[in-house]
Image (cartoon, rainbow, N blue to C red):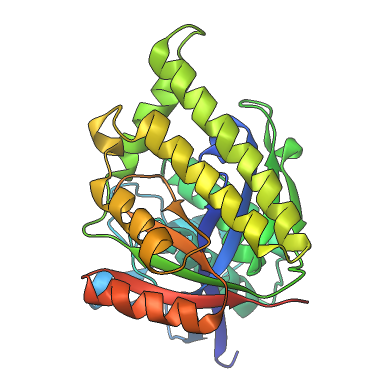
Length: 338
């Protein structure tokens, strides 16, 4: 076996947050940032060197792997080994080198990207090629089933696709068979800025709060509010996918603004984990002062990450520079017509 290299991008949820667990539809886009995993032959066992989480991390395990939900940021590696072994894929001794420019804990699916990369490169090292759908399914199993991470199928599905995807989800409890994934072919060029705000939000508390409210009976004010907001998020994703197919930036921006308005009107002041004053100010500033067509939260919510749409590349780059000067981190990306 020679050196094998794979790379998986992070993803931003452009529209349709929380619909993967609540039912509805989502529209996701790949990010320019991602995680690269390189595999080389090793004398014995599985070894890894990474710069994940902004620091050098190293670990070693047998090729059989292990499942340890409390095993720290590298726990995905031995769990991936264990799942591959369960699938009958015998792993050779391998050394993994990982490079990342994808910020962790910001709603960009760094754990899904990392898990996909590890699964893919280890399978390839064994002479096995896993298709996109199987890789996404296995990455979800590593995170959700083996390591008990509270995640949905959106993250591995979107990162594995590596291009815009529209996903229609079945109703809660209906199973993965009702997940319908369609790649979106942009009918025009869409210029976007994605960014992160302040410190990482408490994603676990946000998800727990929303899922508890979503399960409340009809007539419960919090439950009705969450169901209303997520229905709006889903409808906006439908509108956004149609707009992207047809190269209609104005309609895509309108769908983004509709989703942000629903978040601000219905959720943002309802509970502490959802409170997002910096997000509210940033989106308003992008629309009112930076020529954004649309601007909204991305991911779970809170003061975590945002995405904004612009008419052209110069406007997007100018906006990104100003947002950086305001103390945020921002990246420019373009979705090209195909």
